Image (cartoon, rainbow, N blue to C red):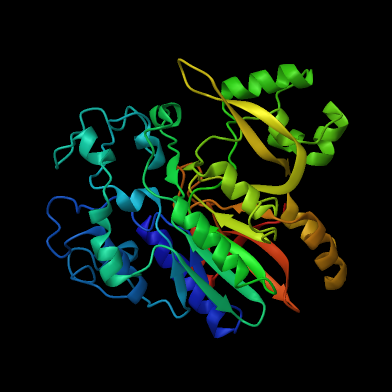
Length: 412
């Protein structure tokens, strides 16, 4: 994972040299957990490791026995401004064990590979998932003193950064599945969001947060249920749920009527946040333009719309079902491809303003497994012309030939 961050820094610096990058947004999970593994005496915690990666500093990792392995050397300091928020992993204290669940597969290992493996450092499951505010101490000290803040960049863009908190035990279903929701937004954060919007009425407003407000449960059981509901004779694909496809198949393009979208999302003030973003809040009626988030390690894109016919869905708890109201209409597609179909930025701006807000989820930069190591979807590259976002492309670091700055781009 650290090596991929080094490659990303190399890419960013290359683009800076061509005057192609103004700044970088990091949407949380800057570290996997706080405590350092046994035997590493150079660092107190992983926030210091992250800081050295960003600054291109080495604490003996460029010397024997590591110096021959480029994956261990921080070769470059990042040359673009970066703006960060925290994710749920930034609150976690302890390491994980390869022997727990399917964690080994993330590193390209099989069950046979880890047979007979034992952690050098004692593994405690409860320590691994323990989350506390105090674990952010070095984040505040070295990286960012703020959890929630607003920046105006350029003449027409206001960025609102919102902290979405630790893992939530309130949604036990998601937590037990290893895909936790997070605590979400406190009442004072909602009021802060409203105030930030009031200060940005003439601007384009982009909300940056770690945990997405909309995230689908698209697991095996959900896919079977959706396939049956749509009366498909083949396996259901995510693209079947794109609004134009879903309209053809089901006669209704609204995603929330067929998919549970309250999965790995924010818990507190979920509905209120959606109302604020769609301009249907009773206190402030102004839509935001874009919501950027991570957390789910997937690439998903949604658009939201105010509704007079809210859908009631059921939370997916194991033992009891809790009905909740979805306060807006939700649609999905590959909107980054739609952006590129407009030749005139003015036409794109009109379409964008009519259909906003959009939610763009982006995958992590780390490899998913050995199978995907050389093609890991990792980050978005936004292009802006005449104050209008015209591209939101997905890029992947091509690890085999990165020395030539070759990148793989998902063209849709």
